[in-house]
View: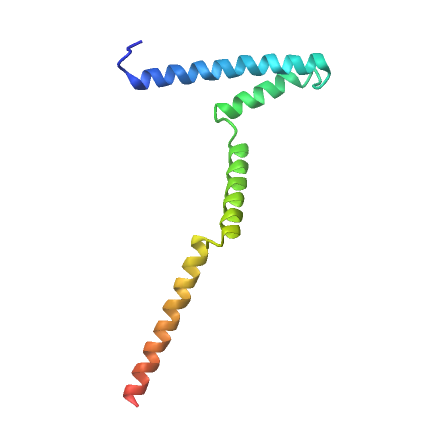
Length: 112
């Protein structure tokens, strides 16, 4: 490994971290089986599901998490009284229509 190649170092650290997480997850799941908190037949599937999520192989889960994050963000903005972009766009459209109506009325007054 080239110590001057930050991309290579980052990749190896990522692989090491993933391996460490996988080992720890297997250990914890075995402990849960021993303590009766997890059915032995479910342990391998649990480990594999979590590892798949870590590797980014669960698009459904990622989409669900993203939707939940968006809902939480929208709720926070609403609680703080900050309008959403969609709401600002709607207001801009209404303002544009009102300005256009006023210009048309102003031209009608001058013509008449």
